[in-house]
Image (cartoon, rainbow, N blue to C red; front, side, top):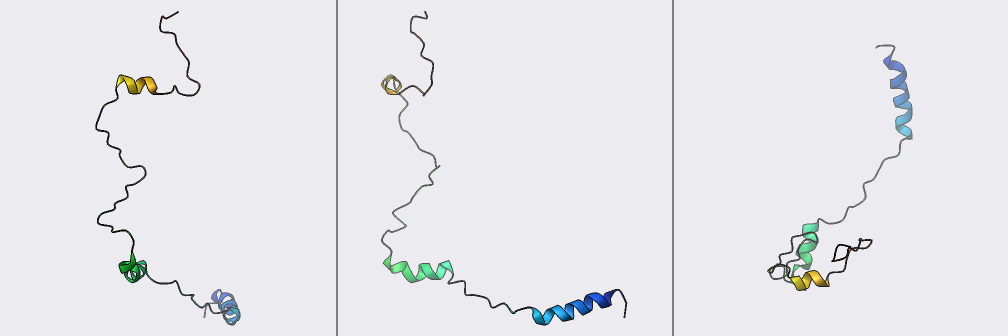
Amino acid sequence: MNAKILPSLTAALVVTPLAHTVIAEPLGEHPAVLVARTWSSRAIDPNTFIVLHPAGPVWVNASPTAKDKATRAPAPGAVKTSASGK
């Protein structure tokens, strides 16, 4: 046997009995099992109620008008300019 391996083999044999065995804890049930169990008692029909992503597109069916532009508040810290150019 190689003399270089002997110290590490000895250390492994000494440390191994000191190590505690690890018992795996239960992780719970699979998400599909949970859904299947509560499927008949759901309050919202997923076929008729679809929630869009918060950052999803918003479709507007009309372009902004002059009235919309006039009612917008200026941005905070915006520089006001006069209409006559003075």
